[in-house]
Length: 164
Image (cartoon, rainbow, N blue to C red):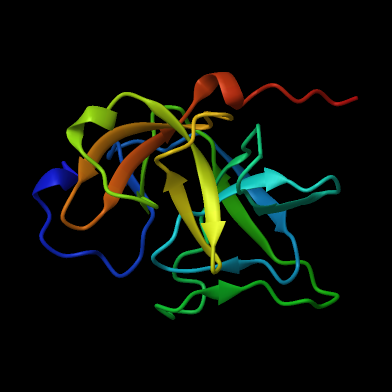
């Protein structure tokens, strides 16, 4: 699907599937001071408290994709305020959902169907094309000219944390 695109969208988010309500967790508490850029991945992890934070290198389990696009309308992104008022969002955690994000290196069709890690550089979350240690996302499609990937949550890395 994304392989034919000629221009990057202003805001990266869920691509589909369309026509159904994805499995999600409503009202997840965002960690204060986290930054979600418009042209970035928005996968989050539990931060050890009640909050979710941007996931990065070394994170072995994802909560899902934070639906924060459009919060400020800024292409630059959204910084969660560090205030006494909690800031919340919906987190999509459906294994059938597809998401758009940048890749940290050149991509080809050879990586389709493979898993990889995440990496955060300069507050931008990328699919870490050169790393396969945590394997938290699955690459479904690529756009070599725009260095974008369509990804899904890896089901074996989603539901592993218990309540104790």
